[in-house]
Image 1 (cartoon, rainbow, N blue to C red):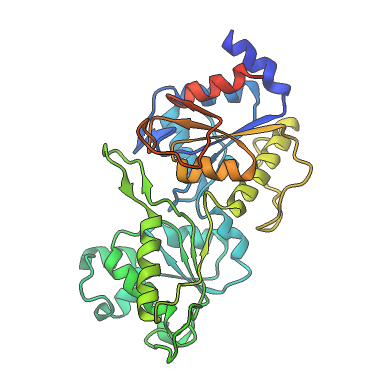
Image 2 (cartoon, one colour):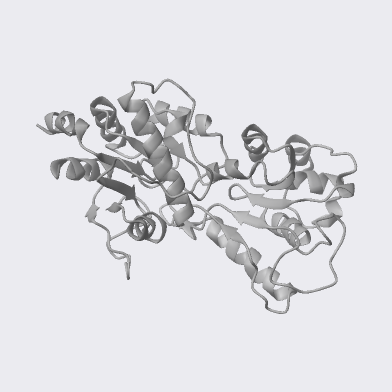
Length: 352
């Protein structure tokens, strides 16, 4: 009966967006019912995407892994990682400081950034920049590369791609860049200002996230908080002017909505094997959306659910991640609270 309803709903103007950590996966392990839920959507050609504040990988790398773990076919055009919208900044900045795990250099270069410097490159240039770094000499040799005359060319922006692993050193490197003279390494400006010397972007505002550990862990939101407070301390308590994308920002939900519309078009045209994606510039609100209802399925009230609520989407809050029944919701009003992702999909379809 459920499967029949799925097939009947294929022509309905409904779409879904799924968070990953705490909804589909717990660490690297599948959450029960996740694969079954997505397979039913695939079979009935109901459009869906994965919308996550996670990152550090290329979109294809992430969907290949999830497809294998859940035994379900997912296209790289069906995922919006926290940093996917950075693609729209490629023509805006030349030299960027790409902050995150060692893989983000490849991500940034694949997006099309022409001059990418990883924070470990700066430590390799001069370890005294962060004397208490926890990175070993072996790791430094593996992750970094020598950039000739690194101090002779200015940085245009700092882009945080995911949670780095050496917070003390990474915060120091970022602080130096924000308080530099015109973005040049080894310099410091002579004035205090809420506007940093070069812009900084954070792509994930989640204070907490659900890992394999049974208690929630700090996320990029905590990393951003520390950077902001230290910046203010160095600038006469002036608040840092930064840019934040990722859930729950409207910018990210607009971008995700455009990805959903593009995927819906591919389903209608039987063109899902194509990797060509038609998307407008960052910040464009979709017009003439084909969807009567879009459901955000997430585990974090402070990002997944409040973002959907403010954007005008429905939401399904699951109990398999950050949220538990004892979690205060405040202004957050999910459309439904369910045990897991399969229950969420079933409830959505039952209402069609």
